[in-house]
Length: 407
Image 1 (cartoon, rainbow, N blue to C red):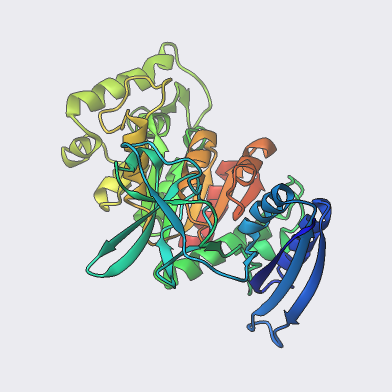
Image 2 (cartoon, rainbow, N blue to C red):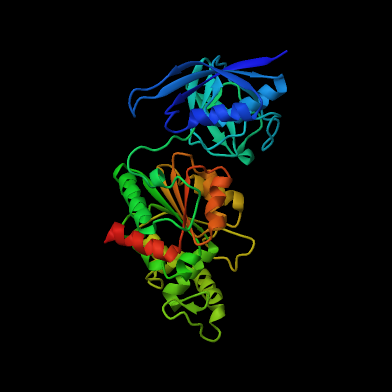
């Protein structure tokens, strides 16, 4: 006996190559297909739709194929309501729970589709009702409470895949794999253009800098972007904040002069002295308000009241009193500042790149800048398909970007 299902895929499925990808997956799985209906849009703004009858050898093969097609927006034509089951205990999900992607997602409840608020990958879907209105949320496992209505299986869940952006965009010509052999000046110019467009539309810019931003002498350029209102929120770790403050107070980064690239005797302990000073102040903000800290990225964040979240690591020295050492609490703190973020600049920060990438919805444009090619591919490898990798020195990138945005 052969087993069949008819699926439908909608949107800009031709020029975004979504339809071609769906058909390739069907063939690769050893199944067969028939395009039952194809409605092509007549212009770039018109969506298209296709209905595809799939035939597989057995239920197991068909189910596996449908699971693979799901994140590409191919869903059964006959829609049903989502299946839910109660969480058996706090932080414990029912068997077969739906694991989310960061793509725009909808859940069918009571015969109507409900948009999931701020989709996030590697969470589960929880349904709730308030004042007669159904709501669906992507909730991390540790925030699920006993008895929460958790979506089980893929039935009644649909996603919208990423589509090729229209208009002038760095993604338009960066169609090959990540490489160091790319036109950097042109790319930075287009990233600046995208940031301008996002800000003009009311979007927010998230900066995720690593310590190399300070080591390469780019700290003042990032500070300028914060000071001039381009950066709206900063996520980083203990290392970046310490070296940013060290460079401001002592002129060094990890003991090396940021202007002369020389290390004075005993300067290797400068970062510890800075941590000790900030701990004596009580917080970074206290140091700014008392006039002890008068420059740098952290200084500009405090002065302009730009929120920042510093997430801790097992390797941190100190740490600074502002660092959240509970990683789960740090994740939750970052989530609270993601509303409205349209663009994220991930600047030479491998660990925070992956952490932040996991939290961002697919609609957020992500530019990951690092001198190492392996780093800039990590986000896409881990599900952040919208991330554009830029292989270059982060100091040169920020210098060029700040020049284009601030003059």
